[in-house]
Every structure is written in C-alpha cells, then in structure tokens.
Length: 70
View 1 (cartoon, rainbow, N blue to C red):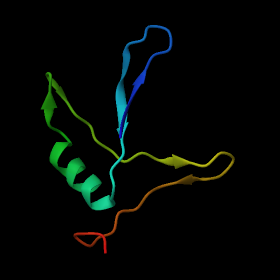
View 2 (spheres, helix red, strand yellow):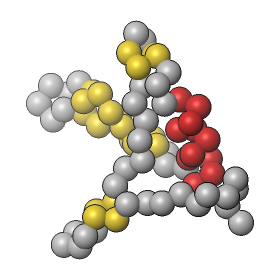
View 3 (cartoon, helix red, strand yellow):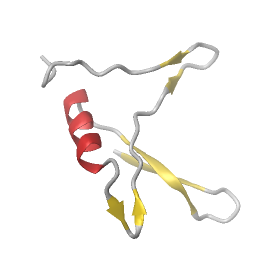
C-alpha cells in the first residue's frame, strides 16, 4: 500500500509518502535499492517511519540482521 501526503490547503503533494511492505526483508531491500537514487532531478531519501501509539512512547522498528525473516 502507498499513501502520499497532500497539503490540506493547496492539494499539492507535501513531498513525502509512506509505503507498506508485506515483510521486513522486502522493506529493507527496497530501501537499500532506492535510498540516494535521483528521480526527477532530486535525490530520494528513504527511511523507516516511526510508529506512534496514541498516548504511548515512540516505537522504533528494528530490522533483523538475518538476510530474510524466518
């Protein structure tokens, strides 16, 4: 799933979005392949989002060091 963030007033893209992957391995491969690549004259900056639980602490996802999820 892909979600592009738009400005409420202008309706224009805010310049970032979110992509959801089915597993951590695919997410890491996509990040490694695309981070720093140039698209439409601009370098892409790819990072993993921080999950926030309402009223709770910020949770930073950690990817396993193994090559693929078991």
